[in-house]
Length: 359
Image (tube, rainbow, N blue to C red; front, side, top):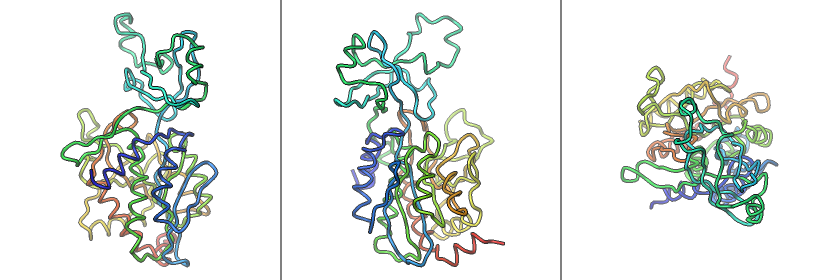
């Protein structure tokens, strides 16, 4: 397994649901530290590495988010079953019979998400989307007391269980937490590419926390860095599977990096988008464009930093996000790294001022 694929395996298999990002934060630190002059952290757990090209140049932030969607233990029944609350958005029909890991003070326990079997469901029940309250986790305990003796307690984090693997001779990456460990990996790889490159700015590359529950870490990271330009690195939704809306842009896994034009939290900055288009054309990188009015990214907070910060979301068309297994393209990843590295090298003070104060 090559270095980039190994990085994605390590990142996606690390645990870190929203509010419990410590394990993934340590993994991120291990990769940022050798590439950075300094590590900076906000008080919620976000982390970035700093690399200075020109101390008088603009401050450039590029960040994924450490957290993945998951759950929290909220009750233990008399018979030892675990009730839970979601951390981030789930469609309950993706959860039945899936394995999860409960992170306790005494160690990790594997459980299975269950519900009533179809044999005992009424006809009208079979036609409904399951409510989360109807699901439970079976850890093999016979009683509440036995579950508590295992170390399970209210407030424990619950993480999806899914091993990373590849398809199509390594071109497709598959696993949990691709949303958004892929963005974290892009931040690391861009910083690696810049090690022996001149750039007319100071780069802060890393990741936020608690994106999946309201872009909370993006707000604290924005306060910490006070960027002049920001790139939110995140996945987007592919439209290359059966049943998708053909009126939406045909975003295809493997057909190039994805630029978000607008979502529910932010309009992508047109001046910054123009520079990205120019660089992509020079480097012969095909760009895809997305609109996502049903959700948002950390860009929704980054662009409100200080007196305002031109911001763009850069990512990848990804299948089956917010489930135990998602699929993305290694080629899209590598092209996104190349694109961002070249764009950063052109963001000097004059250029940033021109796109920021454009009239």
